Structure formats: structure tokens, C-alpha cells
Image (cartoon, rainbow, N blue to C red; front, side):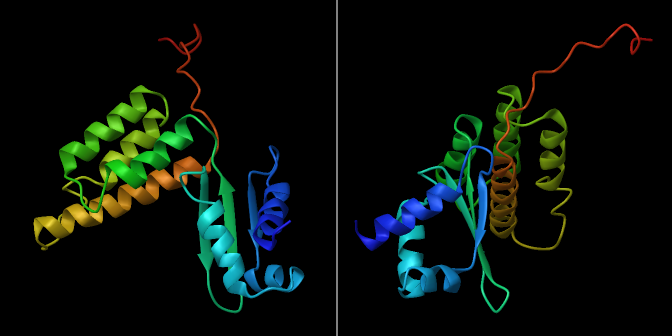
Length: 169
């Protein structure tokens, strides 16, 4: 078995149904496999991509880490697709709001998540003196970050429940 395959297998063994997220130290993993840290980077870049259903976060430095999150299929995969393909480097408020509305309608986002996202990407929230192309770039980055955070949750949004007799007034 090649080293890259061994590293991939080791990480995937750590990612189970019960534990869809793992935090590793790059140097410790490289030491364990007796390889250069760049080999770990290669495996992460080629075998744990968003297309494969993973989100990778890393922090460099002495207390640095690599966090690998397996995203659930369905809604999580759609969110990752949107982050990669549809949003791009810039997005206008109306298009972003339509996208959020679509995700709420499909119950990938809860109503409260959708409302918070709409508020965060609104022109009112970005009412600072900067050119419109920069606002749209900030809006895209903000929306991507929020959708990635939701995708990491690995849970479907439950259908809305009907109010009980006790809650009706």
C-alpha cells in the first residue's frame, strides 16, 4: 500500500458515523507516518476535497491543527456545491437572497438561519463607503462562510411542526 493510501485510510478510519469531525496535528501525523508534512498536505488536498464531501480547516503555528469534517450527503453536498460553483467571487444582494430563500424552501436552512443570513448579507449590513464590486465580494465571502458552517453541522433541518392546541391563541 502506498504511503498516500495509508494516510488516507488512517484519517478515514478516524472519521466515523458517530464522529464526522477529526482534529489532527500535521507534524504529529507526519512523524507517525515517518514522512514530510508536505505529504500530509498532498493527501488532504487530493483526497479530502469539498467535491469528496469534506471541509478542511487549518491553523498554522505552534498550536496549529487541521480539522477535517465529513459533510452529510444531500443538503451538505448541495451547500458545498453552492460554495464552490454558484456563488463565485462576488454576488449581489438580490441573487444571494434568492439563493438563501431556495435553501430555506428545500429545508436545507432553517427559517431562522435564512433570516440571519439575509440580514448579514443585506445592503444595510454592508452600508459602508466602498465600491459596489467590493461589497459584492464581501457578501460572497460572508455567504460562503455561513453556508460552510451550516454544511459542517451534518444535520437535516426538520420539517416545520404544526402548532399544538396549547400554543394557539
